[in-house]
Image (tube, rainbow, N blue to C red; front, side):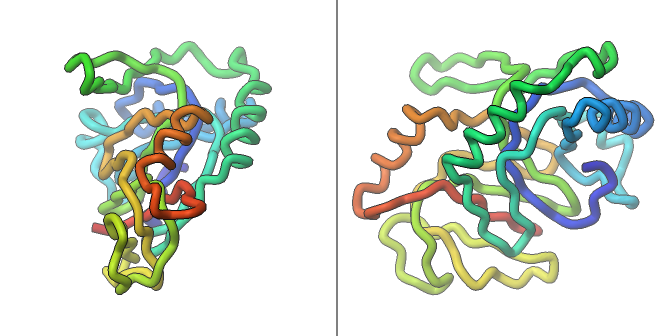
Length: 211
């Protein structure tokens, strides 16, 4: 997923790697393909992207896709998609990946007011020009509906809002070169669903904006 010029957001399962140049990323991408994985790079690596910016805030993750959506769309993150990604991830042969340094995503714990380091897991990220992605729990509604909770809208690359939106609660979000670790265990999803008790069958959704 290098040199992408379409704004997308995704949930992926993988390992975080350090990379500060496009040459390094091209090498990692080739190695990832050889092992049956995909390279995901947060931020703008389109042909007009800024390599100087790559050194400071882009995250490179090698792994498998759980779910994604384009700008202006709403994508569902189903239980089956999470389980299938975990099964594919378990089959990867990491010996085919060169000796690249592991990177880090920091996770803030509100309960303890402390940060921890995560180098492998499930991540929320986005790429392409001016990307932003929100992971929420809720239900699909018309974009002008009066929400029961909060309304999460998508926006395409012409800055036109999507036809539908998500009425629910935000779990997390990421933009530009950022990357967030997200918990999609069965226990965590049960907690998320409990946050929207007025919805009968809430699901996990991605809303993606060109912003």
